[in-house]
Length: 454
Image (cartoon, rainbow, N blue to C red; front, side, top):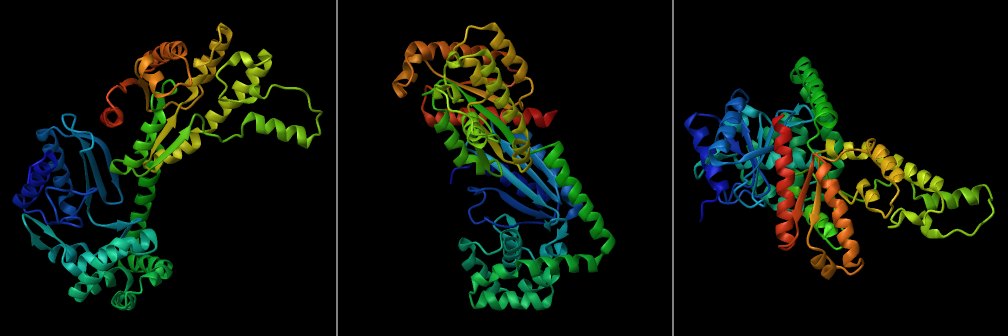
């Protein structure tokens, strides 16, 4: 098999840990290593060597040209996510180092027993079959309320092959009685029954954790809460991306591809179209007000009430224009809360168009532009604004909703907007969707790496 940059990194990591005598094991998805890593590499190391492994990972990344753009240190978990600027952006390296494996501040496995019973696999180490089955079962039961369909037969085979170690690991977490009950359910393949045990297993885990060392456990919970608060509020691991450009440039297509690829580097993805929509459309609100207060109907051009109206001159009065813009500015301001929440959960937040669209509307009034500029200062600032651009002729070929002259006019305004934004980047869409998505991914990774170095 061909040795990729990922293969070289992993072989260097395993060789370095073996040479240093570090006690470790790869927890899952090890069958095709180092040639195929799957989604990520999960590795358990003994607690006293966690810093040494972290230093080894960072040294290897510098030697091989990998750039760190996401890093997490939470609940005894060190996460490193790299990209290589000289390679395809589809080649992302995600490494999770557990020291030990915790669940919300509580140890899920007996670290020393787990590592002392590891077995050799090629040039690295993996858990004993019973230990691996117990860990998979515990994480999925507590985290998701059941055993994943793809893992059921693997858990069954490994638990049956090594029941003693399986029971030892589960007894540490849930007690002997619950451990034996779980083994019986596995033997009878009663997978649907596992979900009913989630609450009782969580309670057993809490009780056993407190029994072992109540003071240490309370301190661990406090540390876990501190880590969660820091990650959610002060240093979110997510990213807020805005895509702008004329209709036909491919914003929706790029958004959908990023949504499907987000799992490679993020903990999910959320897409918004133009605005957060915390507030209802002004037209809907106005209809409710008229109905609620029995206002007389009057002749109004309904186009005036549409936020997506591409011509500000449709508003019959400056007052109406100001009310409408102020109303939707408040909507964007309120959108800070869900955006921050999603970023705190480590998600990629994408806006297909954003507040900047108001600057594209046809209006020659300097007063309007000045008012928009002032109000825009109160709108949540994206981590990156990507202007998808191409020639007006090519854009028109993709979508004939706008004339080439209108596309040219909008492109000129988008150019002005992106040039004055410190976080703005232009991305050409002249080489197909795959290349465009890869270019946008590179913008995201570069920006996150820059933020991480601050």
